[in-house]
Image 1 (cartoon, rainbow, N blue to C red):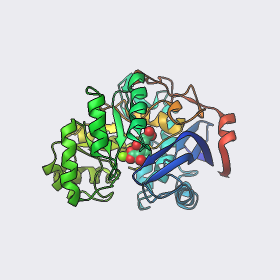
Image 2: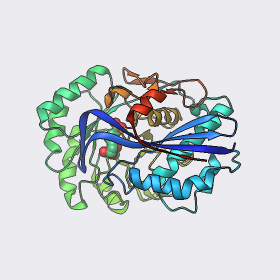
Image 3: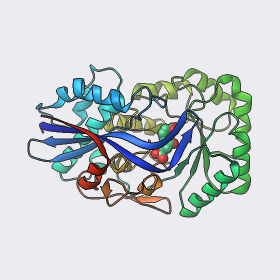
Image 4: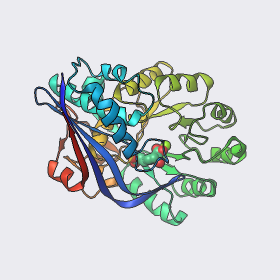
Length: 368
Ligand SMILES: O=C(O)CCC(=O)C1=CC=C[C@@H](O)[C@@H]1C(=O)O
Ligand SMILES: [Mg+2]
């Protein structure tokens, strides 16, 4: 293929309710949507998961636009590409900026799977027809409100409930949830809100039979996490600390993590995500697909990745309606009883609604 035309769009989508983590609150979703067009007219879609603020990672909507326009798009336009796995290699001289890289690589995977007449899931080596999903719940104003929200999602059938925690919103919260819902699969995500000095506090979470605790310590750490894991009965799952296969290997070898949350954007794209999946499979480390409040395009990519064999734990890819009144794809992603049916049509398997995209677009630029 030869990509001859790329469109970057900056979208803003209203969220149904604010989403709060230990690092801040999102009340609208801003992101870059990428459209790549091949010489034969095939169109591929990619989404950058970078937020408008650098709280989860250092990347933002604006830094992504800069990286794409000034460095990444020029490396791709008008070049012959046989297989999307080459894109990683082409980008290798550019350090980090994984979410920007991933958005463009994802669009190229979409084009490739359409041209080879297979679903993106199949192109990635996935086999599942349905994927299990859980849901992620932000920090609330009161434990009572959280209990009500959890009850609603349990009723909807989500396969596990992830609860955001932070200092003073942790042990009592999990104690109440476990008491109220004795049989629900719970996990906690701290988004790096603790330090090794908090080990005694974190050990109290062992009482609540959690599936895992996600990223309790610093976002760039794999050393202290190894020490903490020795003290905890609950499995640690790394999110923010893993940007590549090499990071995954080092964290697993050190004993810093027993489970890995794979986010396509954080690791620089689908090719690297599959490599991490394969390494974890060989080393008996279960993985699951994390979420970044994606619109339908990002969700579609997550669904496809999750069809790989070692995605044995429910991911964060909930229904489109979890955050948005109207998604940009048709049909929307729908989780029924905690399960999403994987589309079998070629490419990402969902159609992008251009009118809806237009209504959320606040800036747009074309590159030829
Ligand atoms: O529903 C989703 O898309 C997942 C939401 C979620 O848990 C997260 C979204 C964005 C940043 C983080 O707070 C985070 C996570 O750390 O996994
Ligand atoms: Mg997380």
